Amino acid sequence: MNNTVIEAQGLIKSFKDGSGRTFNAVDGVNVEVGSGEIIGLLGPNGAGKSTLIDMVLGLTKPSSGTVRTFGGTPHQAIAHGRIGAVLQTGGLLPNLTVRDTIRMIAATHRNPLPLDTVLDQADLTHLADRKVVKCSGGEQQRIRFALAILSSPDLLILDEPTSGMDANARHTFWESMKTQASSGRTIVFATHYIEEAQNFAQRIIMVGNGRVVVDGPTDDVRAHAAPSQVSAVLPDDVEASSLPGVQSVSIDGDRTTMTTDQSDELARHLLTRTGATGLTISAGSLEDAFLALTTDRPEASFAGSDHTH
Amino acid sequence: MNIAAFTLIDLRRTLADRSGVVFSVILPVVFYLLFGAMQDYAEAPLNDGNTAAYVMIGMAVYGGVVAACATTGNVVVEQSTGWGRQLALTPLPTPAMLASKGVIILVRALLPVLAVNIAGLFTQADMPAGEWITCAVLAVVVALPFGFYGMMFGLLFRSESAVSISSTALVILSFIGNAFSPLPEFLMGLSRFTPLYGASSLARYPLTDGIQAISDGTGTVTDPLWYAVVNVIAWTLVFSGACAVLSRRQKERK
Image (cartoon, rainbow over all chains, first blue to last red; front, side, top):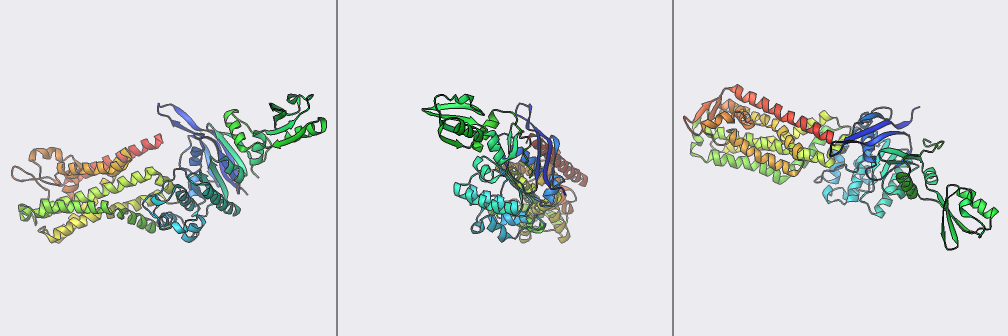
């Protein structure tokens, strides 16, 4: 059984910039997404996230390479209502009510969810008769979400789904996404909020300059890319930089902080072979990993990390 | 899939723009009353009808054309705000969407044409019923190519102002196309090459058999039917061609 939801091979999209030079917004992306995966797509502005999403949705034609969704073209998957998407720039008609907006898009689907169900799932029931133009940014984002789930899609693609939402609304949104995920949907979301990716995604794909910089399970990405910090008060006779696995050392008073990607080994060594005291270990955050990966290294991969589950 | 429901909501939304709709209906009616019904020449006979009927058809065409142009202009502006992307994510096939928009343009164009013709019924306008109906139907049909005209401006300017620019230009085109008040004979040579000449001459043909009112000489000239037909076809091709080129150019840049 083929349960590949998205399959992108050698995907390139080039644009002409103002001076007529071409540049590759997406520059050779190979990605495979399996059924039921929840993927966080991270990358700085202009990294190519939105262009990549546009190609997966068939809104933009690749300059070269192929995208297949559910084994067919994106267009076919859209026609069968298998993909729902919340786009960053997905426009809404300002003078239409929330209810009419949903009814209008529902009319384009074969078997849309009942209006009340969608309103409820997107927490819009109390706003149904309000005009879109009178809705806040976060509320409009919920309308886009409502439109995305109308066809009960197998794949949900969300480009910055929580932009314009306050902390409370973001929390509620991710709670409702958990419901979506538990029904077995494949979810791909692009976000600026690294915390959201860390909390919700099982797998992280980081893009920078149009390329996939990192692709792996969230925990692995964090562990591999962002070194842990081991901090302790060391006896005078221990030279921190010569300890196993230490990448860098900083000293603050009598406390020495070492960065390492082998925190367990280093801690064991310190506690069993040296007289180190007051030892603490802190895991690197995804944010550190993100910064490290998108600024320093052009490409990194985790051989052997199983990211298709 | 329910195209009818889709179209109906869209239509209701278009018609919810009260001021736009009222303006597009009232203006041609007022023009007809001012330049047709209230004039001394209103009851002057013209073939089987009278001059008021001649003016009425011209104003109906103007009204239909403005409505068609404003409707598509707004559609393009909407598309550029991202609604087009939203629709592109639905299973709605492009032909179905075009048909849906066609219905909306038709209804929008129908409103002013109906209004002007009703105003004609209650005033001096007179011609045989068959000709009357044919002229009214033709007035709606010749308005449709101006959907492309409105789209062209929308693609060019991509803002609300596109609609007002294109609508204002239509007033000038109506004068030069001899759809409003009669032009002096020397301008007819130019007039015949302008888009509103074809639209108004064709819609008037059942009544006039080609007669054009002019402001000097004997007061009329008679043009063959093919002038109007070729004019309408040529401008339809020009407008639709311009739209095709512009939308391709925009897609490449995007």
